[in-house]
Each structure stands twice: as C-alpha cells, then as structure tokens.
Image 1: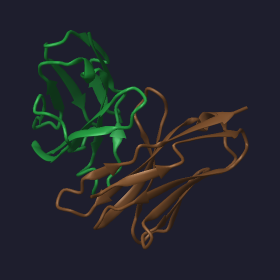
Image 2: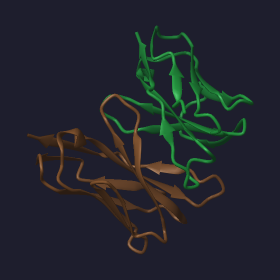
Image 3: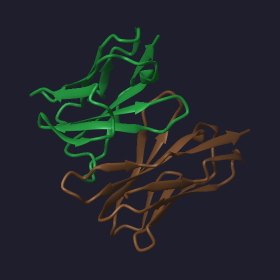
Image 4: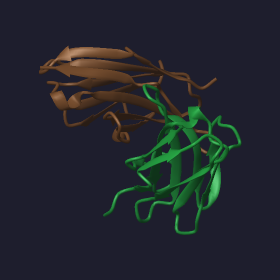
Length: 113
Length: 115
C-alpha cells in the first residue's frame, strides 16, 4: 500500500535554531516528492519538488534532500524564524497512469522566541 | 496573474441540505484538485479533474461529487450534509496533472459549517 509517514508529529524549537523534519514513503514506482508549508487556516504553499534524480534542492532557508534508494526525504530549516511556525507536509507522487499524490499527515513546527 | 479563487469563503448549512462550492483556477491551468481538511487533521484528497475529466478520486462517499467546465473552473457538490462534513475545503490548480511534477497552487479555501 502506498504510504507517506512523517516524523516527528510535532516539534518546538527556539528562534534562530536549525531543525530537520523526516519523511519516509513506500510509494512505488516513484515519480516525485514535494514539501509544502501550511499556515493555520490557509492553503499549503509549495516549497520544493524533487524527482528521483535530484538528491537536494533549496528554497531560501529550506533545503530538502531525497534518497530514492532508501525512500527517505528530509526538510532542513536553517536559522528558524517565528514565521516558520506552520505545518510541513511531505507529498509523494506515484508514477502510475494518473500520478496520484499521496499526502503525509504533516509535522507541526512551533518556533518560540 | 490572479491566484486560485474559491467561493464562497464561508458557508453555514444544516444537516440534510446540499451545498455547491466553486473554484476558479489560475489562468492557463487545466487541472483542479479538491481537498477536505477537518480541524487538526491533514489534507484528505477528494478528486482531481483535468480537461473536464475526473482523473483521480479519493476515498469519499458518493455524496461528494464534482465537475469541471470547459474553462477549467470546477465545482464540488456535497449532498445530504452530515455534521462530520464541517471542514475547510481547499481547491488547488496546476498546469497539468498535479502529480506529474507540476506545482499546485492552493486557494484560500471555503469553510463549511454544518449545524
């Protein structure tokens, strides 16, 4: 069964610190993996999209890595800011005929001053 | 370029009624996906439309239906509303099928409350 699991479920860190969020998936055959940021009560915003041939991609202070062999991805946030408080969602697309997206449950990140 | 728009933004209905939500995608985008998000929960995929055809469907009962028009605008309908249907309904558009490496852009959502 195609699944996407994220850890930790929630995380609290101090402003200015770095953190890493994890994503494991069983989706096969794999097409691409993306990370979204969702502020409370708003729609998700895409941070990165990676195909199997890409093992790292950055978007400002956000850096995503992908290991297609172990089916793992991580999202690293550098020098966190209060505005980084949000849910971060990992989404994997399977390379079937319709490329359906499989959504993780998300990691809720809280940045404290 | 205008973003994804959803109407109405807020809606209050009573059990047993039906509701229709509307989504206008970004100009040029041909794929529209719908999601349900209940308080404290992740996004649950409802369906995806591309070129007026439903291409993917999530695990929701038949009370949830949708359609896409020739101008790519989409509507979703929920019949015989239940209390558990209270949620934020999000629409997202992309150039082509969302899973094919295309970036999805989400609208602000419609918050539905069922009393």
